[in-house]
Length: 89
Image 1 (cartoon, rainbow, N blue to C red):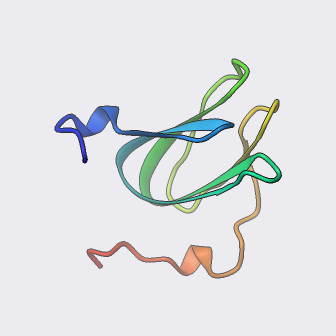
Image 2: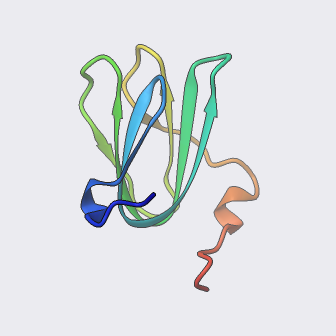
């Protein structure tokens, strides 16, 4: 169920919380290594990590990795992800 207030839409994993801001986003979580990876196709996201680290705000084509116990950080985008298109395109 999607809330009426899209500004408050969030996904929580064991290591990160991703807040969505009118965006198309790909989220991958690998529980075995406690890592969440977020690729922003369009729009922006605000990503916070468990542990009180400063949040990171993404822009289109940013890939952010969150590892348990570490601050979110921008990483190289996996091949093919940057070719992702919004479903509306």
